[in-house]
Length: 106
Image (cartoon, rainbow, N blue to C red; front, top):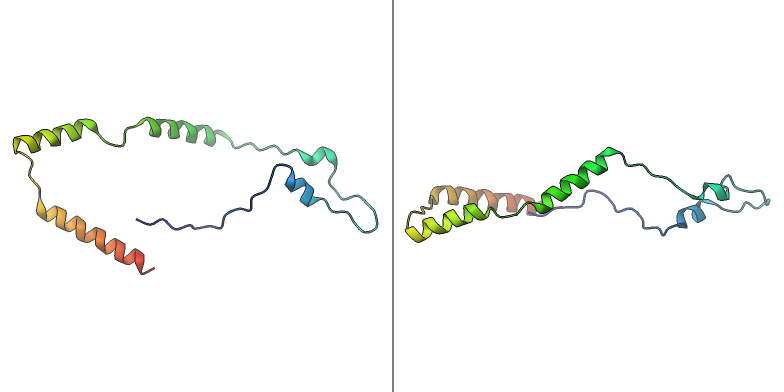
């Protein structure tokens, strides 16, 4: 599945560069509205950031593959008990191909 970008990337700026861009000298020699005390910026992201970091940590520690399920399937194959439902496999394959075709035509 292809994931398209939905927004334009933000322009990259170096630390301190934004305050330098915001202040321009006026031709009559007067100072602009920015002073040297206004050069620091404070950002508060809220409790959502902590929740996202916690979720990220729990997702990272979760295995991608269920090792128990894989072992069960291996055992079933070894014992000859594993049966493939070809109708379900065919239906899912057709669905996937349709999704790929429709995504490619966009």
